[in-house]
Image (cartoon, rainbow, N blue to C red):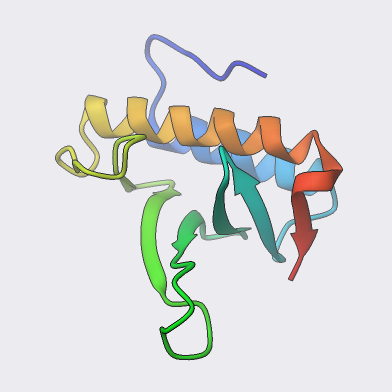
Length: 119
């Protein structure tokens, strides 16, 4: 599902993610998902959407240590680039473009039930 929009704002992208999570019965739930061979934890609720990269190294402490790669709310947008190496200025057009790319990847993964689970 493409989510491109020339004048898209963080709120528009957040509204889209919230609708998609609601449609799938996932709103307010944590899900674990594989995106291009990497493990992520995703959650969307009434306040924000966040995508968290899970550190897969076996020697780290219990839990889900990792880092946020994307967070979108009505008034904020933070996103690493798809290589997870650079961070555009939060809430900038580039951050919104990167967040949109993460959302597209996540929604495509959610359409393949074998790559995600409810935590």
